[in-house]
Image (cartoon, rainbow, N blue to C red):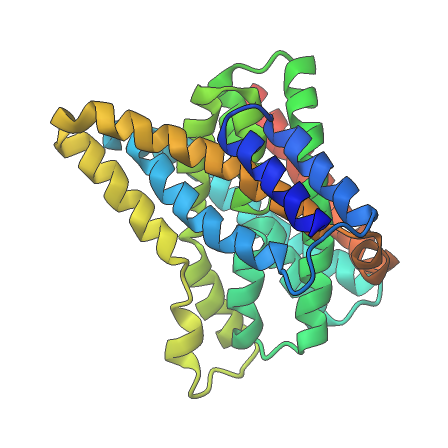
Amino acid sequence: MIAWMGVGLVALLALGGFIASPLALVIGFLLAGFGWVPRHFNPAQRAKQLLAIAIVLLGFGIQLETALAVTGDALGLIVASIVLTLALALLVGKALKLELSTAHLIGSGTAICGGSAIAAVGPAIRARSDQMALALAVVFILNSLALLVFPLVGHYFELDQYTFGLWAAVAIHDTSSVVGAAQAYGDEALLVATTAKLARALWIVPLVILSALVSARYSDKQGQSAWVLPWFIFGFLGATCIATFLPSGEAVYAWLFLVGKRLLVFCLFLIGLSLTLKRIRAAGFKPLLLASILWIVVAIGSLAWLLQ
């Protein structure tokens, strides 16, 4: 009962706009550490469901012209980061004597969009459940760290909103952490980061197809594994089109966008509830080392690209 009351209180504060996204994550982590997570409650699953809704609502705050401009500006960086990250993942994974499938899953999650990419690529290469769980765990840990670190680094280098948004979209794994870090930085950064990240997520499709072909296991699961694409991408694009071509509803769109932002904060609290010390220990050293190396290289490389 006490655990449910705590979750409910934080939910009210988050949805009411009284808690910032990094603080919501920390509160969730602390509650999980004290064992105050309600029984039979899966916060990670709930966060995934609510995050999809939040991202669709954020689409109402973006104009299509802006989306196309952001995607075009970042296309070279997006393609380069994906290719180099995957190549580096296989090379470093081999040096660390990790299983090829594990290294490929971690590289896929780092290169595109974290858990979504791992979940999509896993069936294509017939990865074992323990390999997928391990990759998800290490990416999840770094996602949570990125929420706190990236805004601090952005302010240290005095990055403008646009540059920070692009940087977050390229260098942070999951969409939830991208929009969370960007929201903490500013509204413009949030719009840029969300747009660029969802455009980048579309690369899941060619990645899954290529992964299946390279693994030489392109069997009867071709149709199923090659088109695993988060539905919220289409919802986000639909909301963006509505806001662009039906401008008469601007007041309603602004309200929906605000709801999306506040729902996002609550999602980050749920992610914090999922980050336990047990999960951190289960991630292991070598997979976490590989994921950290990839993350640091992508973060530094993409920032250098944007600042040149």
